[in-house]
Amino acid sequence: MLSLLFIPIAIIGLATGICWAYGFQFQFPSLHIPNSVSNFLIFACGAVFVPSVKRLFTLILRSKGRVWETDNGNGGVVYGLEHGRLNLELPPTMWMNMGYWHKNAEGQNTTKTLADASKALLGEIFATAGFPLDRSTTPRILTPTRTLIDLGFGCGDQTLYLMDESVGTTLLSSPSDLINWSLPARSPRTSSVNPKRGVLNSSTNEIGSSTTPNYIPLFDSYIGITNNDVQCSYARERVEAREDMNQHLRETFDGRRRTRLFCADAAAPEKWSEELRSSVLINGKWAKETWVLALDCMYHFRPTRWEVLSYAARVLHAGFLAFDLCLAEPKHVSLAQRWMLRFLTKMMGAPWGNFVTVEEYKKKLRDAGYTDIVIRDVSDSVFESLAQFLGEQDRGLQRIGLGLGKLAVAGKLFGWWGRSGIVRGVIVVARL
Image (cartoon, rainbow, N blue to C red; front, side, top):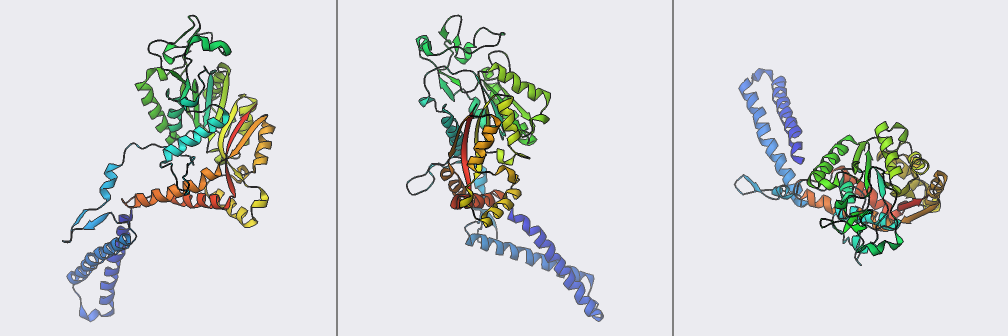
């Protein structure tokens, strides 16, 4: 990226040569400097100035440990570290949430990648709700049918992760384990669950078949909503590619598509298309449980998050899961900090009305109709660790000529949040 700076510098150098050459001739017109001499002066300025500036930049970068090219001693350039770009794995994972970061006793991150931290945050949300994603800790019981409405699903990583058959609930080891479980109501279009998916066949009282895995997905159907058309298209491509490899992931047991992604404003249900509205309502009637998930996104909702929360409770009769941001209690926030945060939230595209205290958040949930509310503060495992990761990632990328760009600035903001405690990262679970 820095190499692009040489273009305007070269232009400045040439302009300087032109001005010097013609200015000299203007001051001493009797000398009658030929055009060939003026052109030579311009050429000389460009030929000397550009390599000199490039050499200066190289020395500066080397002093900071950021050089990715090196001179072979004969004026030529050989490989330094730039070939590190050839070893980056593509396509990359595209997780994008603040993550849940595990630390050692010295306070250093033991979680090394954003993907692992992002999965861990998702896992903490579901564990707080009472159904962990780790199959090794999940009770061996059949779960009721569940549908998930995911607000702000990003580039599809959490979509693929949640709908993956390897993430879910372990099946019953024998039909006798059904003693404390009853089948939820099914669509009249089918009398039993697709045996490919390893669930009970009500007519034979048998578990699956020889092709049955020993687990079922956590959710039977998934509807994702995002207002970013680029990310939505990218996610659809990834989901369709996964479905093409695993045909039984494509449909639910009653013929509906298991995973559907929509480009719409999740914050404004009244603006949803008829197709989207009917999809969420039909899935809600079909499933025994409906959940709305908002993973690290609702503080961006305009004008506020409260409209869609009310819709989830009163229309969809859905439980609510989220990682969200809250303000610290007023006694812990100075006036200067408050105004600084208000300015920064505007810069990050987050309406100030979305920043409320935990108690105000609970009141909004109760006003929407939720009664069983859990808000768990996980700030100590989020902000400072994320800032540390972003700093390390930026330094590592700069070594091979890349960098985090504006995301590096976000790291400074997260570090401030972690040190000051002015913003709290919370997991929210609410039931009607």
